[in-house]
Amino acid sequence: MSGWTLDPNLDLSGQVAIVTGANSGIGFETARALGKHGAHVVLACRNPEKAEAALAKLRLDHPQASFEFRRLDLASLESVRAFAASCLEAHPRLDLLINNAGVMMPPRRATTADGFELQFGVNHLGHFALTGLLWERLEEAPNPRVVTVSSIAHKQGKLDFSDLQWERRRFKRIASYGASKLANLVFSLELARRARKAGSKVRVAAAHPGWTRTDLQRDTPLFRFLGPALAMTPPQGALPTLRAALDPDVEAGAYYGPNGLLEMRGSPELAQPTRRARSEEDGQKLWEVSEELTGVRFLTPAAV
Image 1 (spheres, rainbow, N blue to C red):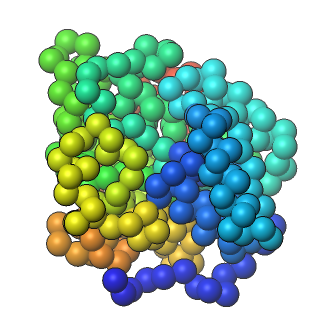
Image 2 (image 1 turned 90 degrees about the horizontal axis):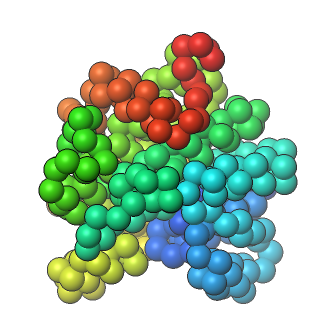
């Protein structure tokens, strides 16, 4: 695979980055790359045992790099608030937020600690709240960015604002996952629009990893069966996220993914969000619903 790669001379010294879901998969590889190039990286993970194991491996492989683990459970708004508060207290500077963590197609409908449908709650609402709680600190950095990881599954997603939590419809895990990843992209594009209108210097972008072998696919037997032959490795799958986070030419609202067949494999290039993802009406609706559900309010007209 050729194409865009990280500049080997990239120096991120002095920068602080948060990567959610950094204990495995593309989150782990994203954290590795950022730390290797000098950033202090906060591994924001739910499972302490897995996070400590990831932290030990990163420190063994890159003894000169700077990593730390802080517990974050995106399925709990209390945990999101506690994590954000601890980071704000510990780090007077925050340069980069990578909204990467997620759940994928659980076998049955489940809910978060706050009663939200699990995929919508973790993949979107948790990250919405986290971004809002950290936004002011990001604003203070010289060249801050927020990158949200979506999926090619967003193309099959639909946001039913009459039943976002799948309370009245028969739960369909694939459709629910697609809707949550569509929400990720709708949120990112709306965040970019609001940041631009507010005159914010935070650059907002999104990415998707194509088909990459990760632990997310543990509940999808077909993906587990075909993945070893067809899917990219996590270091390859992390490149769209890293390009969105680090390429100096990235424009606000950009979206990156693999450039190969059906965007499943290849080097990271600009990808095209669907018409649904670009809907400004849906962006505004989703923002308002997200504020109401999470209690986190930022970049609203009153605040601007």
